[in-house]
Length: 88
Image (cartoon, rainbow, N blue to C red; front, side, top):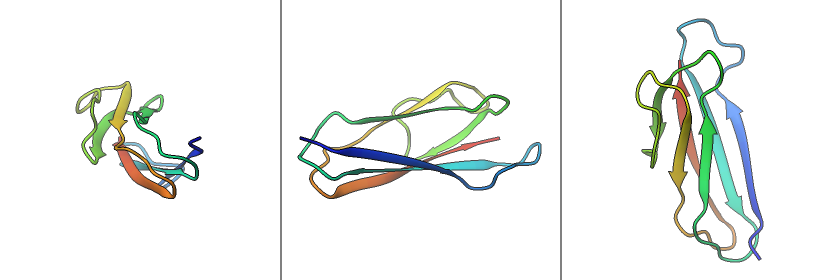
């Protein structure tokens, strides 16, 4: 079976008002092949969405708040990737 793992890290913490903050989400699969993986992240309270990389499947739009979603390609044993979300 798949054995999925995800970790998150902020570029800087704390952040000053009007400063950009980038969250990096690293995901991996240490188990069997899997499909249909979805990574989601919510804009933290007091921040607004700026960008996502790679482009998100859905996001709240520039200056919005809410959930950012990435649909991840199939993941085989030992594979993974990185997505980022920048907020202000």
